[in-house]
Image 1 (cartoon, protein in one colour):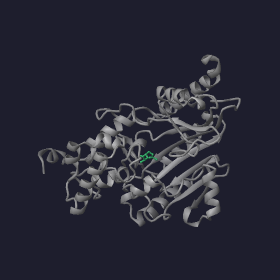
Image 2 (cartoon, rainbow, N blue to C red):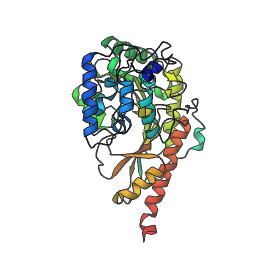
Image 3 (cartoon, rainbow, N blue to C red):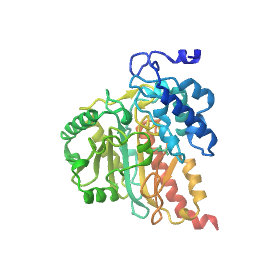
Image 4 (cartoon, protein in one colour):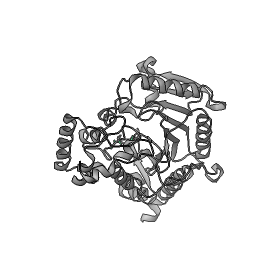
Length: 382
Ligand code: ARG
């Protein structure tokens, strides 16, 4: 072991033991060497490829977390799927610590400069009354959605979960959801009992997660599917909780139209009620811990489905505004999908290094600007 590696064996503030120690199996070392070569020789530009240089690789390839996760578990998805934008997942919370020299650079790059010396602010949902309806006349915004993700304390993330863990997490979460009050009251539908027709309908209505995501699949996140997976849905289909998909819990609020204050306040209330009953994994520096580093911190993704017929013709201009306001533009069906009928999925991109309120406000301000530019488009260009 190099002295740099010895240096890495330090007291972990996430698992409260010494982290990084252990023996990486011979076949995994081989797999890792091949993977590094494969990344090196391919022309791809994922964040993984950008930040996994030889020094970082050599320093991390012998390390292992208390759950037995290796560098290979982290990078597998990005190696198998060379079209990944990011290409890395944390198989357990401690991986963020053991493999920090890689994760930290990727986090900084993705989240607009959140450095390893930076710290996630304490949760702050802000004043909902300072947000406005994004499109009161209903001309552009088809729907508005805000979600956050949570991991239960004491369990690893997907790749290291056993069948029993899936069942236990599902039970804890659904017990807590049964206590929800007001318009959050609803019913839990386990995926295993769902007919294919209902599953399809819920997915096309953007209520349920897609099945068989190739990035999650390659990250070993789909083990024992559909055990422990399911969706909790309120009567109006405006509030849902996904159980054991990418994260242990995804809490989602949505409505047709642009009434962001209504959608956001429902989410805040849901999180408040759920947090009274469940303990979620949080690190002082990284905030709420999630399977994918793109979701760390607040884990907030506030989005709209929006029609932009003019800006849509000038995608360069659209990307320019998006960059300026830290927005991410996706296809209609969300991540890795095409734009259908000129409807874009626009959301805040960064989720760490700012408060929950500020994450939502980034989307709020950016979408108002997009609408302004959409309206001015012909006029200003002439
Ligand atoms: N791993 C995929 C990629 O690198 C997805 C990353 C972000 N999305 C997510 N659902 N976590 O492109």
